[in-house]
Length: 89
Ligand code: SF4
Image (cartoon, rainbow, N blue to C red; front, side):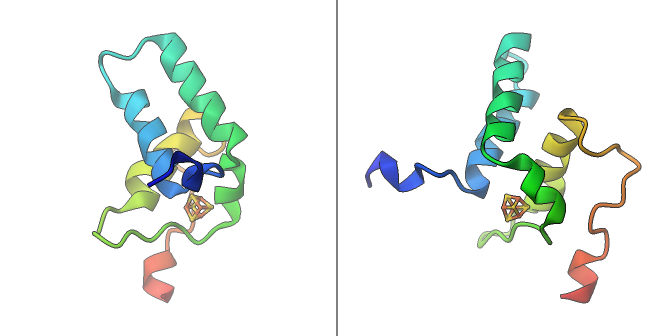
């Protein structure tokens, strides 16, 4: 598979970036770059999205996107970001 398939990123790009944020071996600079990359990829658009779906069952919205939004001060732990998404689907 060619790398340019992911030229525009996808939800799993956010998964990779969020892994940097929780990696104990990552430096503060690494985390800053990961947050910057997430914003450059359009993390703010996630605020208006119902949330990711993952074919193998990873709860992308809760485990990946929400922590990234919090790390970038786009929401707080108290924010109700599409809390009822799964209920209304
Ligand atoms: S929350 Fe929506 S916009 Fe954000 S990565 Fe998932 S599918 Fe894309």
